[in-house]
Image (tube, rainbow, N blue to C red; front, side):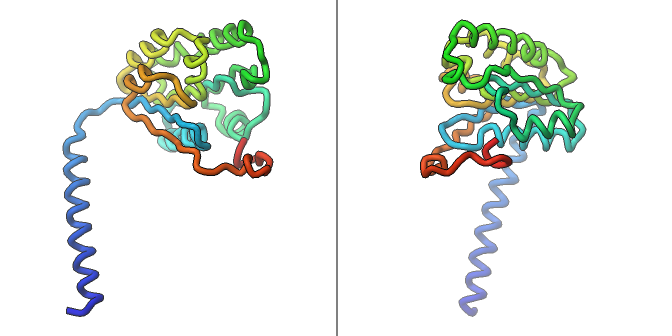
Length: 203
């Protein structure tokens, strides 16, 4: 047997083992229901990932709701696209901008409560296949919203509904309540090298 043939044989056996593992995991996953996903960490890409899931859901004709906490003063590409090209998406923003810009705790709390009053009914409406709560974690970290109430709404949403929560932190109770938790790690960022945020990439 030549070296090339031996490499091919090793690769074939390795892929057979990998396929057996994947097939076994698929076989074990027999529960059919919506999932709760938390995208957290200090790296770039949490909201971008969430909006990727919005596109995926729309591809299947699913009903989608998106509520953005914190964001709203600076126009973003996802806002432009959803408002112009996807009017079927229920899209809402808190509209106050970043908390470090407002520097108004009582005003931010009032805005968070108004925005939660929009998001909360989505989490009890079985017609929504996917609900994205972008930057919700900050509302919990800053105690703008009652964490127990928010987590209860997430846990007790309709069985077929999936929800995606993004943002740094949010606490261990939130992580425990979610089905999938992914942490985006900050390894390197262009901004720290003096490169300006870019439309279509960063916002």
